[in-house]
Amino acid sequence: MRAMDQQAAAATESPEDLRIQFAFEEFFETERERLFRALLLVTHDWPEAEDLMQEAFVRVWERWDRVGTLDDPVGYLFKTALNLHRSALRRAVVATRRSLRPPREHDPFERVIDRDEAVRSLAALTPRQRGAVVVTELLGYSTEEAGVILGIRPGTVRMLISQARAALQEWKEREDV
Amino acid sequence: MSDLKALLERADRAVSDVPLPSDGLEGLQRRRDRKRRNQRIAAGVVGIAVFVAAVWIVTTVGSLDRSETPAVSGSAETGPAVSNCVVTRCTETGPVPPTPPPAGIIAPPTTGYLIDLNTGENSRLPKSIAGYGYAVSPDGTMVAYTSGDDAGTPQVFIASLYGTDVQQVTHDQRGAWVSDWSPDGAAIAYTSLDGDVTNIFVLDLATGETSQVTNEKPTTEACLGCAPLGAYGPRFSPDGASIVYDLFRTATSVDVRIVPVTGGKSVLLVRGAAGGTLSPDGSTLAVVCGGPFVGGQLCIAHADGTNLRVLVSGSGYGPKWSPDGTRISYINLEYNPDGGIFVVDVATGETTFVAEGIAADWLDDHTLIIEDIGP
Image 1 (cartoon, each protein chain N blue to C red):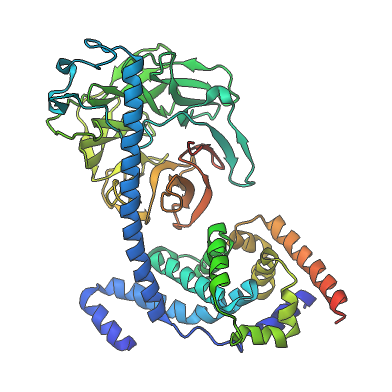
Image 2 (tube, one colour; image 1 turned 45 degrees about the horizontal axis):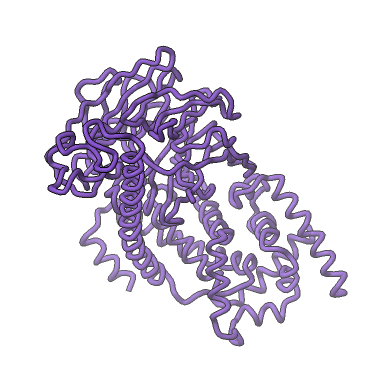
């Protein structure tokens, strides 16, 4: 399938266009799982994580000629995805969709939430706190880099992480774990 | 390893059991195609809406002007006599009502506020400087804007940002719409409507003298109910020697041109574009391209108009460079048909929503003056 697509594309696109296209495909295949998992932890919602991941990749794709040359295109991808997550307009749309969609008894993420205490504990955090801890503690960015990715000041990142620690401690005490 | 890090790694391992969405690159391709199609449709709808709104606004303002200012050779009831009209714009029943210049030139009085992009803090402009088309002086202490004079005719005013020292600096019976300060802060470029054609003028603030920069003549382009043609929206070049402006050749075609500030022969920069403005270092031109009437993408090009490329697809009207030349503010009518101010990083193309608003200008590298969406 991919080979056919490549042949078809080769008929209409220049070698430079094809090089850019293949570089994006490689980027997509490499980063999609990590982004999806990070978004699952931030959103706690499988369909929303899927939607965010797709939209973020589409936006990066549209600008790939520039983004592909950046020092840290992965950071740009996460920044795009988390910016989208923050967008008030988008959140309203997601909320509407959520209210319209059928019960999720077969949602694979729901089963993980039920089973895993670590995942469940993250629900005690606000979306902003989850974003801050995922970007710093899981993805390994510094608070300065996380500030750029999240579109907030490094001091705010530190504050959110501190609040997240306190909220988790409180959750542990409440759940007696 | 911190507790938090350990917890997240455990959570990450747990979610690795969750299957990835089955849609791979093919799903992405479908989404991109759908998005492009929707953008084209939305751009068309927005373009039509903007045009209809502009027609409505200027027709309304024009009718007010006629009632408040007795015609030179007619009466207030009948409007100017046909002999005072541009021939191609008069009909058997009387003159065609004044028709819209591009959106942003004429607008109902409104107000604005300052917003700090770093902190999000904002502060409203004093009511004493209520107007529209705010343009900040190069030193960031003064603001020029358009507001009605005692007779209701649009004129250029200047004032401090605190709302003091308000001064009407134009007294042009044809109306004057502010656009830009010269880089040395000594002059202001504005647009004036003369009959059925618009031209660009420069006002020397020290002497009060005005000089005409463009000399567009009424054309034979007949266009009932559409905008007067001519030169609009002057922006000084960084050296202050030239003015970049929009030339509306027909009702639906506009070019970005450049002309010496002393007048004379103009040079075409970009055909089929509007809102041209040069970066502070003079190397890059930002324009609304891709059909400014429908869609209006934000594009950049070399200063001579070559190497035109899209910076923001979708909607990017009213581009303004930040003083350091790294960012451009623009109006995104797809986000909000009434006006949404965004900032794009020129190097990365990353866009950021700033505020609802119909126009913006930079006070410094992190502060924008935002013009409210009207009532």
